[in-house]
Length: 408
Image (cartoon, helix red, strand yellow):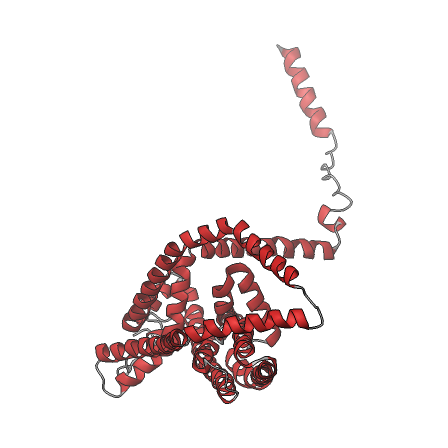
């Protein structure tokens, strides 16, 4: 027992007399981190790349949904464009003491009367001159055949007949496409009338309860973002109103210029041509080219190549005045989109959605440009707090009560 206790005491004393071991140093860091091995430019490019890919994916999904829901989206966009014109008119009537229901009714009926009257007048003029148009088309075709035979090409009768046979054969070979297109007319007409009714109902509801609609849209966003959304909506709505007013002015000038040119040159169907020019001017670039080509074609069929060339000069003159005077001075100030941006927007819209895409490309691009600039500018941060009740002009169909404040 005493020997064991002695050995234990001896070991304890040996441990107490032993010098303390120095602390173990941590392992040295690696010579270089992985991020330090990658150049800064590459890391910056990678950071931008995944963010751009994410934004592109979201935009692609949105475009896909818009294309799939086009029978709903297009009437809603039409309703918003019409409302941008009718809301100020309805508000003006109410400020002069008209009841709300009467001002909305007058605004809706006025728009329907103007559009319906233009279409009725144009269709009536075309129907009244359809017989003459058919007879003149036959005469023009015979003159064209005579020119092919006696002109510089010297086509023989057999060659002309072979050409006609090839045209007929090509039409017959594509008869399946023609039949399928004829069968799909009923579906297209049904979609058109359904879209028209949806656009009318949407316009009516915006005139009646635009305030509630915009308030619901703003409340979807987080509370801290509502001031930015509300201010961006005000800026976008103002730009859209300016676009509609200026586009109507530009379309009217184009229609008057080309219509008067056709009238003084003795070109028939001058009134339908002016109406088509007015409606086609709402599609930038594409509509002007199409309607101008139609006016030149009618002049060529009815009045010959000389008058057709003069008509072409009139169309080009009007388009030059629009492109170099009206668009830069009026449209550019109202929309704040560079002409190159307009061309690219129309091209992209036409590629994605055809005629509707070309029609809505410029207003959508203008509104998005203004809204993004407003949000990125940061002026909305100066407000004391987000409004409980949005202040966008979309719902300003009645005069505000005295003492109204944001958030009241």
